[in-house]
Image (tube, rainbow, N blue to C red):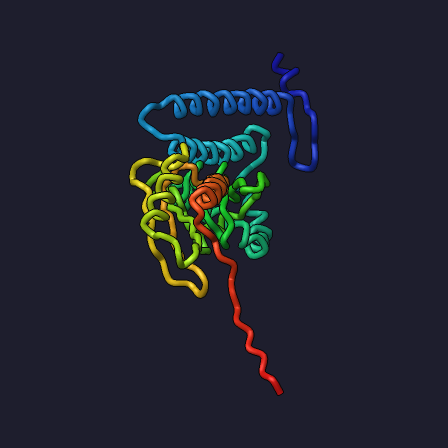
Length: 270
C-alpha cells in the first residue's frame, strides 16, 4: 500500500508529484468545501443578523479560507511555498505595478464589506443612474439597473465617487411630482385634490403623510409639488407614473387646466 501511494505521477527536475499528494489534495479540498458550506448555513441561520451582515461576514470568511487553503494546497502537492515566493519575488513586484488597479479594487472591496456604508439590498445612485446592490465581492459589485440590466462595477468606482445611498439609514424616502396649472385655478381645491390622489395609491406610505407645496409663479402656470414617502424606492418611477395618470384624470373631472406655454410675438411694421 505504501509503495502504491508513493507512485510518481509527475517528475520535473527536483519536483516530484506522488499519488499520496494528489489524494491528500482531493481530501483537503472536499473538507474545505464541506466546512465552508456548514459555516454558511450557521451564519445564515442566525436570527441576530440581518441579510446584509450575514452576506458580509460570509464573504470575508470565505476569502480568508480560500487564501489559507491555497497555501496549504501547495504544501500538500509537494511544492515548497517559501522557495516559490522567493524565486518569484521580482515577478511579484512587476505584477504589483501592473495590477495596481486590481489591488485597488480588492482594497475597496474590503472597505465596503467592513465599513457597511453600502450593503446588499441597498438602492444607490451613481452619475444619475439608480441601481440595486445584489452582491458585493472583493473585486467588484453586482448591481441591477432599472432596465433589468445586470452591471458589474469595480469596487474602486464605489469608494472613489459620490454615491447616493437611498436606503442607508431607513428604507423609505421622500419623492415629489411637480405640476403646473392655470392661473384661474382654485388653489385650495387643487391642493386638496392632489393630496387625496396620492394618499389613495397603495404604495405610498400613510406616515409621514403626503403634503402639497405651492412652489412658484411660473410664466404661464402656477407650480405645485406633491410630496410623498414610499419604500418602493427602486420602482418609484412606476409609482410616479401611476400617480400622474390619476392626477390627470382628476384635474380633467374638476375642470382644472394644465396650460400650454405661451409666447407673445410682436411684429414690427416697417
